Length: 171
Image 1: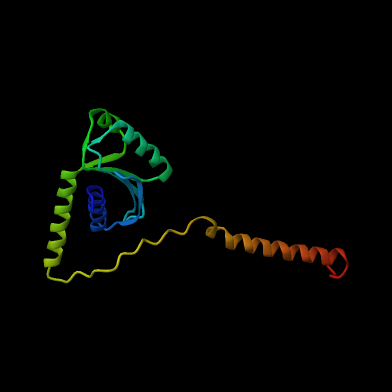
Image 2 (image 1 turned 120 degrees about the horizontal axis):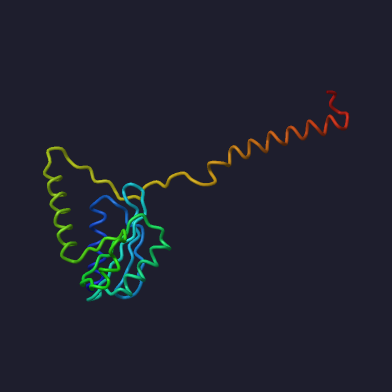
């Protein structure tokens, strides 16, 4: 396992330990991957894992353009390298988190200690297999039944009118 794969594995494990579901890992190139995450609250998140020695403004701009396609609620750059001054200035004011390798290790350590404390608790902790959250019912399912009912009522009215028009139905 190379350093990039290790970084991606650490990031995936961190999000899973926080109760989120990692839907997909989209590899951009040998040193960059995007994690598509379904949060425990049902939001869509994207985390870019970047193993370059320096995170440049070009890399940040590329990620920001990818974010438009993902339509994410939250985003983060998880990097093993350092953020250049120009890239840091580019991130200023953007709803984007930057997590370096040291911070990632600290977050994992705190998540591991929280899991160990839960395991030591007096009541046993149930471990359930990971499954994605159920998607909300949206879109066409809301209006199909009213539409079919309306079409049925309209059809009945038209049949009655045609029968009355031809004299087969005395009104």
